Image (cartoon, rainbow, N blue to C red; front, side, top):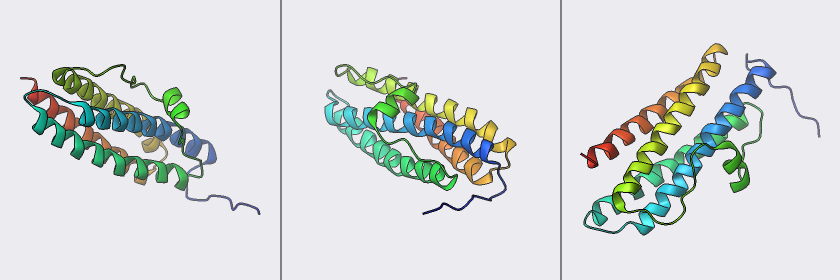
Length: 158
């Protein structure tokens, strides 16, 4: 079976560059999803109910987001990473060792959301240069969610 050439107005090299950047966004997002889910399961203390429900809403949002990012990579003609090994190589968000206290969970999630926002902002530049509006739109939405979530989590620490 032969594959058709992709002719969407973005060069093959630019599509590869953008897909590589989106793969980093995907890896950071998936790693943050896993961390958030872990914290949802394992949070304890006086803020248990609040954090348990908040973390659930956050990991559900991330579960939908990773699908959108992966599908954009596919639309650009590349395969999306989908293994823990690939995510560990691509992500700059560290995995958790042990179960931190609730306040430290919040801090680590703030750091994670800020990291995804920074990664998305870096990739945005490549997408913008290529006039890749769908990717720019996706990244803008992701930055908005991650920046707002980081703010909400930071507010719990004051």
